Amino acid sequence: MAYSTTAQVKEVLGITETTWDTEITACINDADARIDNKLRNYESTLPLSPVPAQVSIISKYFAASLFRERRDPVGAKAFVETALAYLSEYINEKYFVGVTR
Image (cartoon, rainbow, N blue to C red; front, side, top):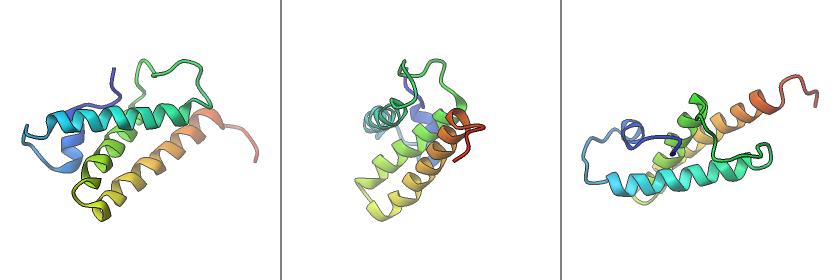
């Protein structure tokens, strides 16, 4: 099960056409693999199920960045930065609560 949907990614990108759905689905798959790769250090079972809401948000922003990167690499930066910020926040809240650094 994917962490986000085509509709969620299209909403972030501000597009409605179905022309890009196949490519967006591939971007979601790549985004989810990126998330799983990062979470592999903390989780023994992946992909996550059920999908936490915050992980769905991370997935849609990573997928949007991958889609945009092919057309506008500079514009993709905002999406990837958002995804990375949410991912860092998720990891800190889920795995490091109460841990003193």
